[in-house]
Length: 479
Image (cartoon, rainbow, N blue to C red; front, side, top):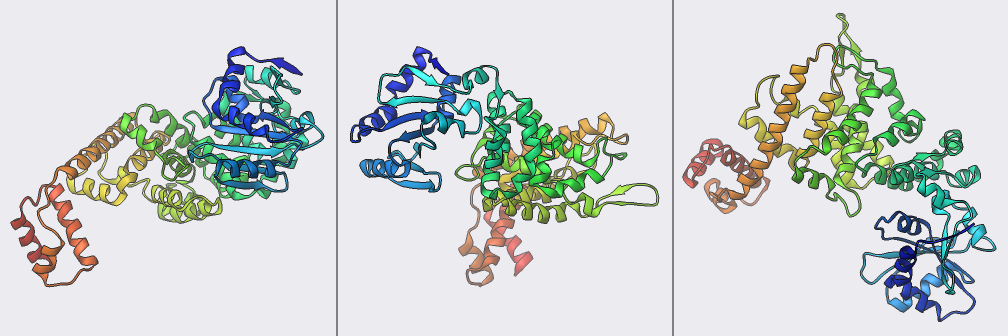
């Protein structure tokens, strides 16, 4: 089916500088057709800004076309999939890139029939010019309008089971639903995800977790067993039931912590939200690491679960053991080392903020200072995780008064953290490494750095204010 584009959309495509560049480049060839396809076309229809540009070329190999284009632009060409004739051209600005594929099949219609979902199985003919229509043989525009993700066929899901995860990501992207027939095909073939490379799995999960409203889709993935296919260790969470401190079983509690992360996020200070949305790596936001930690923070509870003679449930050491287990899972998913480090730290210390002081009491200055120093840049994450964990655990022994007091303490702790950052910037240097080495008659070493950190901490707490006080403290404690 061919459908007329909105005139404004057509003009946007035709007047786009990159599309014009490609059309000019195609003049160097004869008998080729170049189509704009995939996500870029879908997002143009949705009026969503995107740099995800996909093109299909017929009449020449996609890799060859991309290679010649990169030569023309004096930029880089990366072969993404030699078997399926797909390459990426990095544009000179180093930010935009073009994914170019050779036509799969005898024509564009057969090519589109091999794609994942109807909303991605559309094409717009750029070269040769003359068509003002979108090629839409599977009614993708209709499904975009109705916010429905519909697979082209079950075979296409079996051919690339990663499309199971992509179905949830695109449903999230459209704030829509997955077609029932597609859902049945997904559930039937979900075990095939075990055959997909970890790098591809985590790339899809990262995109899902980066969204502010991903919970309903993550919950559906959990309900359909997909999360446990990807993280088999989560199956054991179902063994641990509710107790007097937890109104939910452990598996449901874990999902509720994830949900609360998203609920609480919007109410956090603006600078905290900006911190969460900042990139921990070149492509992964800190909020993504936090959501992994939400799913893994209690992953070792089944291993440490005991019920004593009084019927009390205990999970001694679950945070420490969980950190090691979370690291193994994160490494299996081939996550970057920086993200693994954050997940491990948040899992290990998710109880720490709530342990700084008993209920209805405030932490001491020294306790807060040590907490800030130990968690460093991850303080906002571990505080939000602690808040979500507290709200998600309200058994009969946990009163509303207890929850309210703990949440207020955690909010105050976050505020004190920002104050400590401001104070640390303002503090004058009262002693340096040369002074330490001279006083103790030692050479450069880790000991010097350790002493300077201790002095800085005491200075932050107001216990040391002058160089003379710092010198006397060194002599008393180290000479």
